[in-house]
Amino acid sequence: MRPRSRRTAGLRSVTVPPDPDGLPEIHPLLSLSLVRRARVPDAAPRSKEPRMPEPGPSPLQPSPPPAGSPAAGAPRAVTPSVLDRILRGPSGLGTAGLQLGLGGEPPAASAATATAPAPSAATATALAPERPAAPEAEGKAVPGLYHHPVAEPDPARVEEVSRRIKAWAEDEVQLYPEEWEGEFDGFSVGRYMVACHPDAPTVDHLMLATRLMVAENAVDDCYCEDHGGSPVGLGGRLLLAHTALDPLHTTDEYAPGWLRSLGSDAPRRAYRSAMDHFVRQATPSQADRYRHDMARLHLGYLAEAAWAQTDHVPEVWEYLAMRQFNNFRPCPTITDSVGGYELPADLHAQPAMQRVIALAGNATTIVNDLYSYTKELAGPDRHLNLPVVIAEREELSERDAYLKAVEVHNDLMHAFEAAAADVAAAFPVPNVVRFLRGVAAWVDGNHYWHRTNTYRYSLPDFW
Image (cartoon, rainbow, N blue to C red; front, side, top):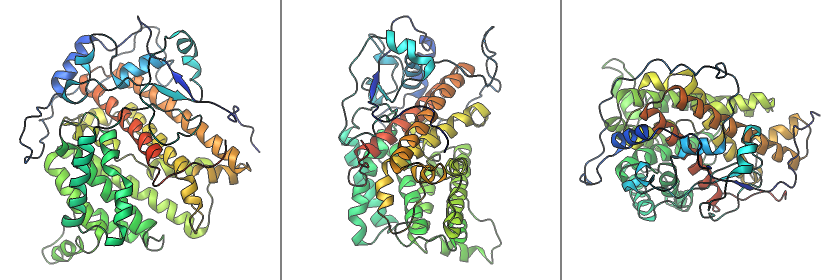
């Protein structure tokens, strides 16, 4: 049995306080430029869908590090207050106009709930003054889980997105039979997407993400899991469904058969319609980025299915490798499309940015493992998740394995935030900072949805 790196039993959530005066922040001119470029008028007619701006030039090289700074790849000490300013914007008197919230309104003050601060943040945490946290959401958070509470999503937007997505599911793609309606409503996808995309300028922009999220879940449920899914033959089903996202280019003789296949089942109808809406509004590079991330997701589905067929429990690192592909990555990486701007392809492709995106996807997926733990244990078959794999491979009790999985999540979150701070420093341009904030908002909103969706999730009795 491998010794655990630190104790987790009996840990309490603690609030990481705000920035003390005098700490570094994003330069005011950078913040103002960011706001000017980001604003999209709310007065556009509702009947028209959003349009992406023309992409502009972007720097190809990061800014050189200051003299005496750590070498590339070296650990970087980042205080909670600096992270909060980079990932969630400036705070305090006179900064309301610098926020990226809707209609110029600043989002509610953020706070971080953590098992323990990262070692580099301990001194700043002890010295920083307290400020009120965001209101506690309903539903119990996993004790000791490092996360940032978010303000309640705008109820008017939640209601409108929920109305539109249900009409789309029922009328446009015939997504589910009548007996599944309760599950669709219980998923609360409108609340989910509004929480994850607080800077979306219109409901039309929010619908881009919402359709794709629903389509992704339809494929997962119908092909892989809850509603008739099976690992047997999964590769063929996923490949053909993927052609609804990345179209087949073939001869006139065979194209009609492929076109007919796109309407043959609910997952393919959903993929095709959601992608059609998305490509009309996204830039070509944003659409191609999404296709690439969905191919990653489908590869992860296949690895998990192969292990299910052979009744194989992977090593912990192998499981984490699978979860880097079978995870939420396609969702936060469209934050710029939903926000009405573009992170240029060369900046998105930077290895440092790819690390930020991968860590964000990995952390949010372990959140799913933790909140869905009891739901998956109640199923008829063994369902791999991080606590189950740790328990078997490291010979720990269910409780200790679950608590260790919390530690793994927290380490991923700290790594994500430090990597994001490094990217913001290396590429000090407005779209980079806004994209990083959008990814961070998605991470926070994802936790909020898991925590508050008591229809789907409940916690184990380990505390």
